[in-house]
Amino acid sequence: MKISTRGRYSLEALLYLALHTTEGSYMSIRDIAENTGVTEGYLEQLFIPLKKESLIQSIRGAQGGYQLGKNSKQIFVGDILRAVEGTLEPVACIQTKKCPQESTCITRHLWGNIFSSMIEFIDSISLQDLVIAFNNMDKEEYAL
Amino acid sequence: MKISTRGRYGIRLLLDLAEHATEGHIALAHTAERQKISARYLEQVAVILRRAGYIHSVKGASGGYLLSKAPSEIIIGDALRVLEDDLLVVEPLKPGEKENKLQRCLRNEIYNPLNERIAQVVDGLTLESLLCSQSPEKSYLYFI
Image 1 (cartoon, rainbow over the protein chains, first blue to last red):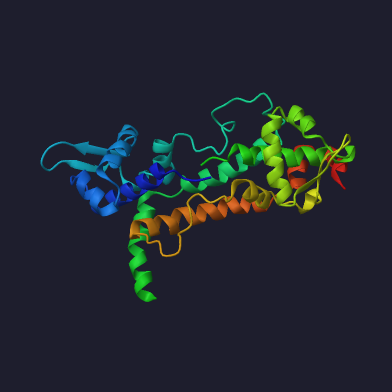
Image 2 (tube, one colour; image 1 turned 90 degrees about the horizontal axis):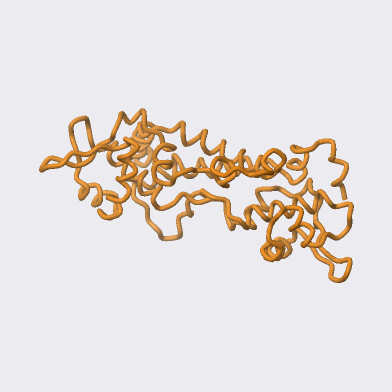
């Protein structure tokens, strides 16, 4: 039931962009790499599907780089994971594959329940929620 | 975010043994045929479940497998953890392993709550409740 490295790194990179870019400002892939610890090469790979889904945008040139493709309120964790992992179903029979035993299969019901409880959660958390949580972390850590 | 074949087959084996509990020891070949899955693979899964104390076997002509516990005492989450090793979406932090703040934020806000949600679903179900969710009229079949 693991989230892939692709998924985790994408979340880290996009959270970093959400924290450090504002409208009109772009961040180079090198800066993102240095600050997330994900290599430039890996980020470039991840940014292809993320860009395709309009979760990030880029411009070329000296001041170029990457920023979020839309408002951080409108980018959900589920969107990011789906962009890089494809379908998030725990078992292929939930969405991708048709199974002849679908209507009578007891376990499909179980996998479906797991799936919906996960999806409901990750589609409710936006990058903006994560930014707020991130900024509150300092306060909590200093309070300890 | 996949449940492995081992996890899927293991749950189907437990369900099948529960459904046919009145027929005495069940030959894996029969389960494999009913469930349309490979008998050889099912044997490997049966070994794992036997070692964990979920099922036991009797050798011989009328031998086969039986559940070792009542279906009401088999919690789906526990059985899945035996089959899948764990049900966590991200590996827990190893002793001495460090996380950066981005990773810590994602763990607190996404990975840990997601693990809890999955656990809530699977730990709230027993083999018995799973069987009943499908066919309440057949529930007399699985008491031991």
